[in-house]
Length: 71
Image 1 (spheres, rainbow, N blue to C red):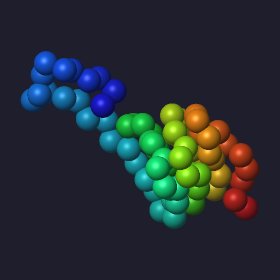
Image 2: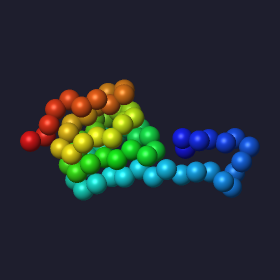
Image 3: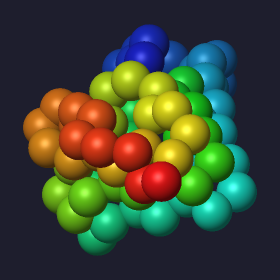
Image 4: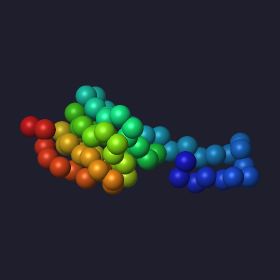
């Protein structure tokens, strides 16, 4: 939840995360809401994804950074 409201339970705003075809997400990764993981990207284990990951990219770390292209 990007806009957490401790006192309000019924009006929370939900921003969806989108995972496209062929995406692999390593164990214990954290992906913030509103992020898009494009086709065939790979997220390394334990990564914290704070921005969109383009198509065919390998990314890992905290925050996750693009390391190389899968092609």
